[in-house]
Image 1 (cartoon, rainbow, N blue to C red):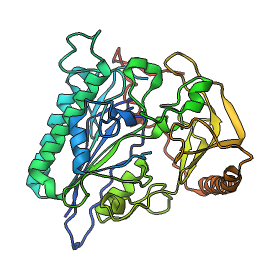
Image 2 (cartoon, rainbow, N blue to C red):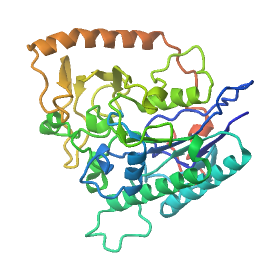
Image 3 (cartoon, one colour):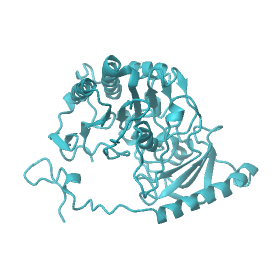
Image 4 (cartoon, one colour):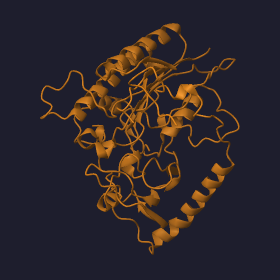
Length: 409
């Protein structure tokens, strides 16, 4: 029996994380267990500390906090107004420019409609909702009565929490017993947006902030890529559990494939892993190693500049991301990397002394792991897609839309 698929309402150019193509996972023959439904909701620029279940100072996410108490949370997850943003449903632009004031309602209505139709059809479904929340520009419905005394970010966060709660309620009503509900984020808050940015919680990247500049979005400090992650599936995912497994948003794709009873595409390597055993409470074995590429801060864009090995984390490049006060922090290249022990120093305040026995013991392991990764990348298959020619990746290049233009050479 084939799957139904819907990529719901992607707001163009606000998504800065990983977006995987949905392929046809239909397979012939029968399986012993029915294929589950999967609902994936990805928040944009949401900080780890924006979730009340993570950070007691946050009081505006009751629906997500309730889902955390009913499921599993993971503590280790790892151009916006210049053009008119398009609103996507699957591969079609359904609204451009998007009306942000009605966006939360559209997310909810379209997702609920799809869940109802898919449930009625009797076919397992995959629903992916790529939220514009909590990326700027922020909106709140209804508008704030007193903007000076109310924080717009918290109002928008409350709006996102409400829409996620309504989608979850719909799942609970029609497909609760056989649906994995997975909520996570793409990266941490955008610090340079000041009061329009979220909270990193305790993951403040103190070493960097003391140098100047941001330790959040665009950086490889914990505040830049550690985000909320919740999994909910009554009877399968244990309730009110915090997993210590080190997971990544890269794991969403292989986990969904495994639950669908399908196979990964051949002739390529995947950095993600099947996290289903972790989600179902049968294992705490996630990643031992994670690599964090430069995402717009100092160094070469896309280059591997930080290596995570168990609870140790090594930085080869630091600085280069703008903070709220406008400072950037000097770009620094570390031939002998800064290494932090995250188990003892979650705020990444004080690196290990280079002459210490702990530093000397872990450095050769990190050096070897990084060399192996670079060798693997060099020999892996490369995409042949030409994104400068494919019109589907340049939806705003329309000379007849006055608010939707692209640069010409």
